Structures are given as C-alpha cells and as structure tokens.
Image (cartoon, rainbow, N blue to C red; front, side, top):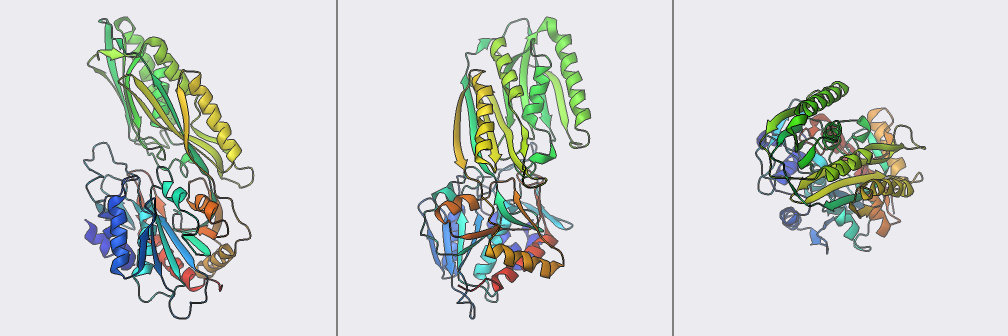
Length: 484
C-alpha cells in the first residue's frame, strides 16, 4: 500500500514518512521509533543522542554561506494517536500503518494516519538527509509522548539545545502560522461500588453508539460534534429512575472526541415499555439534532442477556447525574481573539466495570485561571457524586510573542510566496512550544505545517498538494534565517 505514497512529490518527504509509518510508535511505547531515529542520524554521520527522557536530538552543520545565521531548532514529536474503526482489525503495537492515496489526499486503511506529527518528522528528516538544501546550523529535536502527557517536552532540560529559533512543524492548516496555544490538565474521577445481584425479575438492554466523527479534542471542539459519552448519558437519563447500569465502555484517548460507546443496563420487567419508549424517544431526538453534523451516527438499542451484577439504583442515578452536570465542549471563547476557543473540556473516557467507575477528561485553556476554574467545576460535580478526583499532567499554554523576529520574517515570506497574508493565530490545541519555552525562555518560536484533516480519528488524512506547499515554505524559511 505504501508504494503509491512513496511516488508522491516531494519524494524525499513522502519516502521518509513511509519509512516512519512502518515503525509502531504509540505514545509511551516509543522505544522502536527512538531507535529508528538514532539509526537514521548515525547513518548520516550526524551528531545524534538521546536525552534522559527519550527525546532524540540530531545536529547538522550549516551549508556553505549560511554559517553566520542563527541556529534553528526543527521540532516535531515522534508518537501518534492510535484510533481505529470498530470493525478494523489492526494491532498498533505490532503493525505499520497501511496507507492509501485517495485523489489529493493520503489516508490510512481504517486507522489514524500518523500525519500528526509524522509529516513534521519526515520533513525534518528530509532536511537532515538532503545535500542540496541551504540551511543554517540545525538542531533537530524529536520529542516523545506529546499526545498523552507532553512528557518529552517537559523532561527536556535547559542547556541541551543552543538554538536561537524554534520551528515547530505541528500545525494542521497550511495558511496558518502559529504563535500561541492552549495549556491543559487531565482530570480523572474514580469511584468504587459494591456490585449488586440483578433481580430475577429483570430484563437487560444493550445500547451502542457508533459512527460519530470524533476528532481532535482541541481543534475540533468548537464544531459541536457529538460526544459518545454525553449522548449515552442522555439516553440513560431519559429513564434514570427505572434503570440500573451494569457496564459502560465509552471513548478512548483524552485528546480524541469519543466516537463510540456501549452500555448494558437492566430494569424490572414491569418497566420494559416505559424504558423502551424513553430510550427510543431520546434516540430519535439525538438523531434529529445531529443529522447535519453527524450524518453517519448509529444508535443501536437491543435486548441482551441479563448480567449477574449491576450498580444499585442509587449509584446508577449518581453516576448519570454527575456526567450530566459535567461540562463537555466550549466553556469560554477568547475575549481577545475572534473565533478562538479559550477554555474547553472533553469527557473522553467512561468505564464502568468490575466494581470501579472511571471517568477521564482533558480540560484545555489559554488562561491558567480559567483552566483551573473549569477543572474545579468538574471536580465539584464528580465529588458530589462520591468520586475521588485527581488532577494530573498539567502543562502550560504558549503565550504569543507579538515582537517575534522569526514571526515577521515567516509571515512576510508567506505573503511573498502566495500573494496573500497568512493567518497568524493562536490555536486551541496543546503544542509543545509553551513547555519548551519554560527552559528556553529566550528561544523565538513559531509553528506551521500542512493541511491535515480529522486528526486523532480514523478519518485522518493529509493533503498532497498542501504538503508540497509546506515543504517549499520550509525550504524557503531555512534560506532566510537572520544573522546572529
């Protein structure tokens, strides 16, 4: 499947991307891709090393005539989000991504593509392996675990890099130059429960939600897409006084809007008509509301074998009410930048099984105070329902630098190349620049990249023509880095 991708232009980028995508690289399991990058750097006889947390650094000297320019750090992350369609058989820990060319797009066969941030990695590899691209001194920084904790960026110590300018290649719209991003915090609510024997007079139902778009829980949160966990909870709420929850398995990663959820509930036989009517009525309402945004939404309601255990009625009601009370989606828009989400939350994961309820959220904000305000609101909703709540994985946002020298240079280059101004903006996603800036406060940073749609979902796809535009832009930037 990858051969068609290897023949795309620019071949030097797509071939490196195909090589990279042959290596399994889930977040927190990057050992193989770290070794892949080390072997790549050493094969080129470039200075290559791995820091204490697993980030890979490869250095390349300036080409002739650009020795007096500022040193540039080219930065992308090695890990990728693992999502697949429910009916796709694929082992992310063992298999390379199966890629397809579809018109002007490259996509994967039923899984995420890994263009986020694999195309950035591939472009940096192309610069390092080229012998005809003009560039200043290069420090290539390949970070780990960006998608599930930012631990690579957080663990990078000061003094390892000497660069003056950092080009982060992790933006997903080719007309955008990033100058700021949101920070985030993980919220985990956990509650144990005593399993209750299901009454002999009970019947059971299974509800399945699938076919939602999903997507990036930062960049796509403004779209108002369906969240499988919240939609499932709406269905449960419609018959809250008559049902007991046995199991829920909804969503997956914190940074992905949940596409699927499955639940099993029981009710007394005397309530069967009421529960069926309530559920089916709510399902029809949901489908009507989302017919435009979620045309492929499926909600399957069916009878199933009665389980032996369930939550008691009181715990079921507390769980349903707590999820109903917990905000999902946009909390506040930016008061300074039109159209930019400032603060949001994604109820990413809901698990009920074997005596434990676990709910995972990711709250994002470019405002530290509002991030904590929303986090405390969610904590309160869950604690009122008897949950223990933990905050973890907090990382800072990237504050815009309106006096950035490299931003001015790159914005002017974009206008010169394309005859129109770039969209210079902050984004509602977690880029590593804000974290890296803590130990490298004097480093001048921007972010850009090619068009990537559907990131963090099996619909992820990268535009071929946009990748050509991105590559040309990167090459031009490297030739125009200012003098020291």
